[in-house]
Length: 201
Image (cartoon, rainbow, N blue to C red):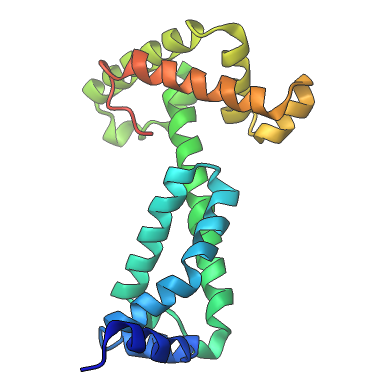
């Protein structure tokens, strides 16, 4: 039986399309070869968008798991595998950032903004409405309890939609200071809200 090292050498010579074809037959060695070949690319692409090492690592696992489960989602006739993989990774990373921003904005929205986001009259749920109003009050109270400089950077990032670099330029602060203020502010929000809310990080 071929040992693992010689098998890896053999698979390293196969092109991406051949490896993906072998994935259709649940070839674990082909999966390992693709992961070794593109794992770092997926991680670095994700990290540039989400700017969070742990989330980027999770996305690597998620994307390669999707590839393992549905190798037919890649169609060679539409282009190179690396181009397709980069596009899939960027799209998933952008979706993750948008989802996090939507959750945060929803949880900290004003009553008027919350009302616009609620289901229409035909599906009104008084209990849900009351629960959401309670959560809003808790979050706004937690935000108001942050030091001004931390609250300011969080508002610019999540409400203003600015990147950390843009916040640094707007406030005239070192980038490291901005990152620290946001990190400390979010940690304090989680500590304040965790006993009351099911916080989604």
